[in-house]
Image: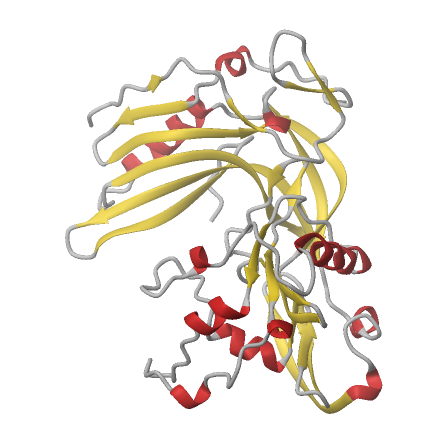
Length: 371
């Protein structure tokens, strides 16, 4: 095996300065975050004093040419571990907030299963105005008839040849209400549901002219169906599409699509209120339970090298980004633990298939891969 040589470039650690960081202070001579409420008594390794901004290495089939991203909360090499749970959407929490019981026109119940919470009942209600809601377990979906038409205008998948999110403004306001007014209404909803979200989010203005230009209604075979298009796009059809994520003290929570599916937090809001709500696999973080020393980029790179060497038929892999985040792991029945994790954004290559993106996750304290 050809051993790699690691090149740690002489730059300061790239710190993600995010709103809502945990209690701490900045040292006078270093732009690092020092936890003041640490009870672990652990001595932080000296290796965390000169963390590089970029790591390079060359193995047999493993290439590392990666930016190193470390949220400020981890800058001293310690990571807190938290208890938590998956948010369960119940009728009592939604009635009166999103819908009124007297507006229900049709209803249906469906028994479902989930990897974390087990069995639950999905409830579906259709309303007199043509809108509908489906909720139960970790899912909440609400949509008005306008949302269906908007779905024909918005293409969010980067792999879609018709991807078009760049045409919707992330700076301008629509005529009916300001971006901030819409954001306040959405944040109020999250507050009522007791769901914490990051203060940093994506917001796209869905104006009538762009919606009209981008509308592309297709059937299941991908054929354009002109008669499915909206007859007219008016100013009162406009809205804002919000995309949120969750974090702990500035460190993003990455679900890895393991615990029952991908986390989704998308809400469309207009002058008449909510147009669409889609929340799935959302988390609620509770109390801190422990704190552990974290592996440095060099240490976690050595772990990856050893594991990749054992994979005889492995395709060539290039690590492009190494970042610290939080991930939920199952800690018991209906119990989750949020642990610091090294996330590696990679590109894997194969002579037959070509190349594709892949993510690897390693527990930042133990070095064990999270599958």
